[in-house]
Length: 240
Ligand code: 16G
Image (cartoon, rainbow, N blue to C red; front, side, top):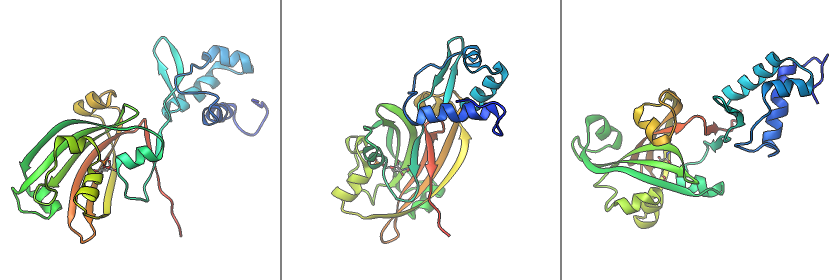
């Protein structure tokens, strides 16, 4: 399976071999890999080459190393498409996962000038500020902070936002959520993100800001989220 004297470097062949086994489900999240020495002996290649391949697979999120325990197959990333305006609940249901939320903050605050501008309301106007940990099959994926005008979206309660916010806006209030703009930036987890997302402080995250509008152009939410970069990747289709 590993071909020596071949134009493709051996370390790269190892990478492709392991990636393929993961994609086919022959290697599953949590499975342990042979040690670098065992792997090298099995394929009659140098340990350095195996190390180079494993390191790249660790850096790309396919494997992870546990000190003193070995190398394991990592949980694979969720691929999120960016061409539809969907809710977290819808995304999880579409991929057969159980959506969940843990509400850690919920209050009405006076809008700061920046929030007021983005929601097109008066400064100090009442705004729901809420923070939810979003869970997929009980695993924390993202930490989301929403700002929503309390005069527009009336009657929000902790029970409602423990379920789907979009379902409440559309099915109970009969508003039509229509379009959004979204900015994605890379960053590292701060103390709060590391605590709630169960990742190390300084681990990579993707910060997303979404401004969402109703059909008539009224801003309906301003959302600042941090997604775990080890569990999420984004896909967009392009045409020219
Ligand atoms: C997504 C949206 C968020 C929205 C939420 C509603 C991003 C970055 N964020 O997480 O803006 O508030 O869905 O989800 O995609 P819900 O209906 O499940 O509460």
